[in-house]
Amino acid sequence: MSVHPHEQADQQPLDEIVVGEREQWLEGPPYELFKRLRSDCPVHWSSHIPEFPAEAGFHSVVRWDDVRAVSMDWQTFSSELGGITALTDAVMPLELQRGMFIAQDPPKHDRLKALFQRGFTPRRIAEHEDRIRAIVRDRLDMLDPHAEINLVDEFAQPVVARVIGSFMGTSHEDDVVWARLMNAILGGGDPDLNPDGPETIMQEEIPELFQRCQKLIDARREHPEDDLTTVLVNAEVDGSKLDDWEIVMGFFLLMAAGNDSTKSTFCSAIVALCEHPEERQKLVGDPTLIPSAVEESVRMFPAFAHFRRTATQDTAIGGCPIKHGEKVVMWYVASNRDEARFEDPERFDVKRNPDHQGFGAGGRHFCLGAALARLELKVMLEEILARYPRLEMTGRPVYVESPFINQLKVLPVILEPQAGP
Image 1 (cartoon, helix red, strand yellow):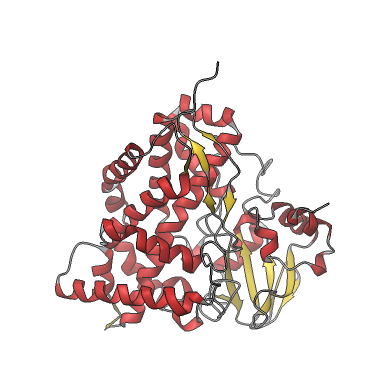
Image 2: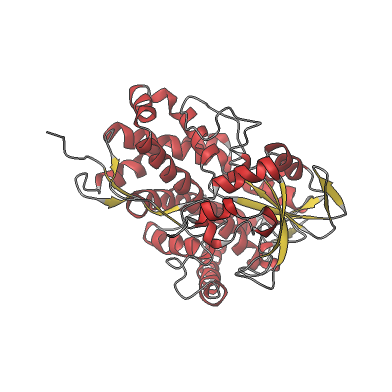
């Protein structure tokens, strides 16, 4: 009899488990394993990464308070020293990562992030609500409510691609191209997103990203517009403009986050609402609960399973020694279900309105686009539930095989099922 990978991991001795091993993620995050770690080994050492033998092992941090402590202490736990994922160089070279402010430490991080914040002010985001709602409604108008559809590809992805595209200044016609590139690069070794293996990321997707971005950079230098790409092209840090490769990586960061984060949490929220019709009915009956449901969805289904820091000195977390240069991986999919922080954390409760770490655990690296993501999720849930309050899943959701991005690639649904006899 075959053993479910989550069950198999739960039965293994903890010192034999490699957290993040791909087999553990075939059906989404291994929540039972993380529950076991929170109880028995809240700072866990994985000695290697099987798919990437050249990569060093890492410490996993799974409790709320420990994740926050690491996130807040950039002097001890650096984003720049070793990169932002459990993999240092295997998918994207560290030097490229350092072109993104998310992979920098102060003071450069703070100065560069401040430039981006011009495009994400509360006023600018609020001004986009009508545009976002129009994008959502237009996409819903295109769908056959009585046919089975993949909600990921036919609704969520096109909506979020157009929203972030409108901020970045890319054309509607190119949405599918940028979405494909972002999914392939962030999806790592998922066989559907990278059928020829993760090595194609550096051989194909990254070169295409640079080529397409360079054309956009050149166009904005010639004809500036009111978009974030123009902000990047004209940005100055310490009196110097960004190099073109830094502009490309800044563009990638915003485009990747915009394409993946909202799509991820929205689709998982729909699964939860279909599996818990009593919670869905609360939202249908009282749409003012939707902002609370958004926060609960981000708590339970953070778009990114982890981010990583690197120890700048010998230190300790919860009494566990951490050596200089070692990786420390903060698992948000674990900390957001910490029993010490949340009552009955595995329960999906649209009235909970929780504090959470789905946009980061605080400090300088709190998600720049959190307000935009919240608005998108609110509008998407409002519109789909108002129009199709009875939507139902027609098959099993399929996850991207990744310990980094926590998202579905297939979500079969019927928006308007036939009425029963």
